[in-house]
Image 1 (cartoon, rainbow, N blue to C red):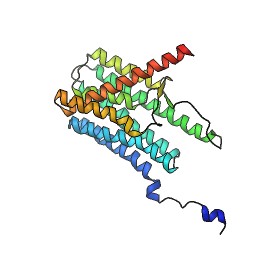
Image 2 (cartoon, rainbow, N blue to C red):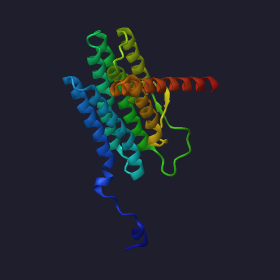
Image 3 (spheres, helix red, strand yellow):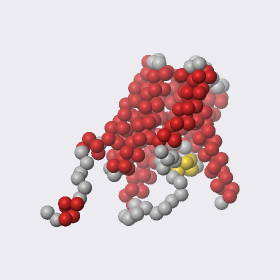
Image 4 (cartoon, helix red, strand yellow):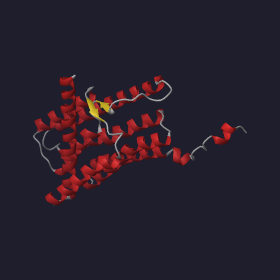
Length: 251
């Protein structure tokens, strides 16, 4: 046995290497359960809980894959499929069901969201796989802060599900226009900040604290958390658009 063989790291156990996929499947299963609950008129609070678990799993799977050095095309495709269910189909259903009695335009809003989410995720997956296949070997060059091309699908999901479960009742026209704007931003090339380089706690803590505070003020955990998701999503969109506009002006 050569010295190189003796010094080579031992392969990780199969369960450890599969951990990112298990997290992605958790995202998918929670999204599926949330969709089923919406269809049968289940508890909005439970829908929120399932989506929260799906979101945490979605934030973790890529980080864990990179930490373990097991990133690959299967994980990329599986992640997009899970995101389409949890953050495309579920918010579309939430809007269509929650506001169906108000106007048939809720169906238009839901269709716009799920269609745009599907297109954006397909584009992201294709570009990620192409970039991986053509990436040069060696250390990666230094780059500026990571960003997404187009609004990430989790943000419209937070805004629309938050509005639906918090009892916020926009007019049919406002609801439809909001959904169409979010759909357009998802399929756009507008850069939005990615926080893959930030600790997970720094991402979740502000929303969690806002949710707790609003729950106390409003007297309802469901309404408070829904309002926190709505406000957090709106802030992310406005901050991203302002940053992109400033960059264009100062270029």
